[in-house]
Amino acid sequence: MNYISNHNLELKGKKVILRVDLNVPMKNGAITETSRIEKILPTIELLIKKQAKIIILSHIGRPKGKVVEGMSLEPISKKLSSLINKEVLFNKKAISETTQAEIEKIPNGSIMMLENIRFYKGEELNDNEFSKKISNLGDIFVNDAFSCSHRSHASIEGITKHLPSFFGLQITKEINALKKLTSEIEKPITLIIGGSKISTKINIISNLIKKFSNIIIVGGMANTVLKHTGKKIGTSIFENDCKNLIEEILKNAEKYNCKITCPVDVVVANNPQNKGNIKDIDEIGNDEMILDIGPKTILSIKKIINESNTVLWNGPAGYFENPNFEYGTKEILEIISKKTKSDKIFSVAGGGETVAAINKFKKLKSLTFVSTAGGAFLEYLEGKTLPGINALNQNV
Image 1: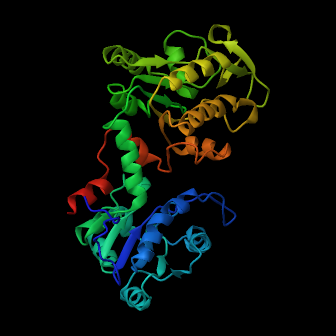
Image 2: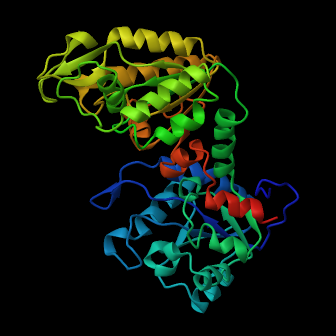
Image 3: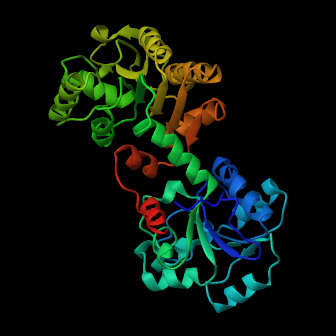
C-alpha cells in the first residue's frame, strides 16, 4: 500500500492532485459545519511541508454533470484558506490545457482548488478519457476522501489507472479505525444501531453478528423488532414485511453467541410536539408513539458498555432533534464518552444522524474516532469492497 506519509517520498515541486470530500452543509451560501474541512488539514499541511503543488478536487451536491450556481466550491475555498491560514487559489475554469499552464506557474507549497468536479458528466460516469484529462494536471494522486470511496467515479477510481496513487492521512485513519471493528477486534465488542429502517442495515448486522458480543437495537429499528416479536408499539413507525429478517437475526445471534438487546421501557407521546411519558413496553397505548428510550433501557445499555472493550455506534436512540426526546441519545453518547476518556474502550461512531447528534451535544472529540462518511462507512461495515480503496490497493 502507498501512503503519502512515507518519509522517503520526495514531493518537492511535484503536482499533487488531492481528492477530498468538501460536501459540507450550507445555508444561504454560508457553511454551517466544518468538520469535513478540518479533517483534511493534516494531509494538506504535510504536502505544504513537502513543498508540493497541491491541486484540490472535490464536489458539493449533485449537479448531475451541469454547472449549478449554488454548488460552487468557491465559498469552501475561502473557508479552507481561513482555517489553514494560507491563500487558496480558486480556479473557476473548465479543466483544460490552460488549467495545466496555470498550475505550472504556482510556487511550491501552494494550493489551488478546482471548481466542483461533478459539474462534468465524465466524473460520475467514470469516463476513461475524463480520468486521463484530470490526471494530466498532476504527477501523483492522493485520495483523502474515504466518504466518497464507495463511488466508482473518475476522480476516485478512474484516475488511479493513470497516475501513481497514494492514501492520504485522513483516509488511512478511517480505514485503521474500521479495521479494529471488523478484523482486529478487541472483545467484548458492542454495536449500538439505530435509525428508522432495519432493512437498510440488515447487511451490517448480518456481517457483524458473527464477530460482535452484543448488538443493541434502538430507534425506529427497535420498533420493528418489537412489533414482529409480539410487543405493542402503538402508532410508532415500523417496517412491515420484516418478520423473516428479524427471525434470521435472532437465529444467527443464538448461533454466534451474540446478545441482542432491545428497549424494555420507552418515552411515548400522542404526537412529537407533546411532552413524553415513560412507560414499560407492555404499557404503551394504542394512540401513543415511541420517541425515545427509557431509564431502565439506558441503565441496561450502560452496563453493556461498561463491560465492553470496543463500541461501534450507528444511529440515534430516538427523535433527538426535539429536546423532549433527546435524553436517550445524549446519555448513550455520555456513557461512551466517559469510558473513552478513561481509556477503557475503543469507540467509533459514524453515519449522518449519529454525527449530527454528536455535533449537537459537542462531543466530536470525545470518542476515539468519528467517521464523517455516510454510505462508505456503512458499506465497509457490510463487508463490501469499496472501489476507491480497491483502486489504491491495486496501484502499487
